[in-house]
View 1 (cartoon, rainbow, N blue to C red):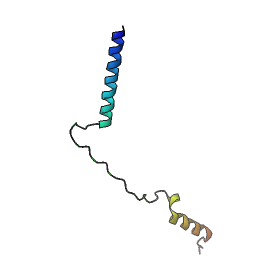
View 2 (view 1 turned 120 degrees about the vertical axis):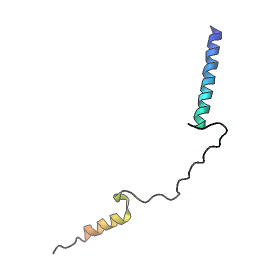
View 3 (view 1 turned 45 degrees about the vertical axis):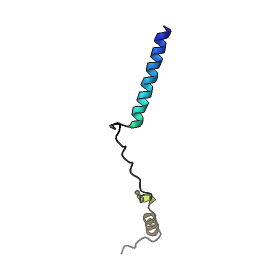
View 4 (view 1 turned 90 degrees about the vertical axis):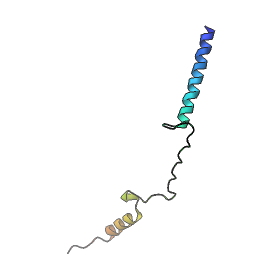
Length: 72
């Protein structure tokens, strides 16, 4: 019984180590080939997408609210 438990533990450890090695290598990579370099993200943040984050849009809203256009 003890031999069976040792065999199961060794099998589990080997399976775990092989699985971890495959996960670190990544999907679709072959041994011996260099890893592709990751692309760098731009260092400047993108412009605001939502209108409520855009300073010019908010300034224009305030201007229109404080000075409404006079209709005829």
